Image (cartoon, rainbow, N blue to C red):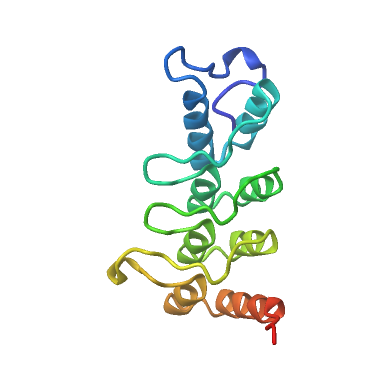
Length: 162
């Protein structure tokens, strides 16, 4: 369900002082809420929006949608031009890492099939799962199917150069 009606009259407008930052903040809120309809309406109204814009913690629309388990929105976002599937928060958490933490195999698969880096690791301290990859997280959480999927994808894409 959209937080705005389908016509464009009630969509947010760029703030006089902050410009498109207000729209980008709205996009991130839509990512958190899983509001694909409003994102599409904003894109129709404003054209090319920066879907990679991040909040003060480095969370993008894709990261927030992954964090909140909104698979349909994640699938839409990864197919948008210039969306960085490997964008990371200030702690180094990517959308794939948060999907692994949430045991969301569906979102992890969408991300990997659209170029997510399986070997990316967090950069925070170990007590907050620092320095671990999505495979490490899946194994630690006992999600054998996700760990197996990620390992298989890694092996399929590994082509050493001699």
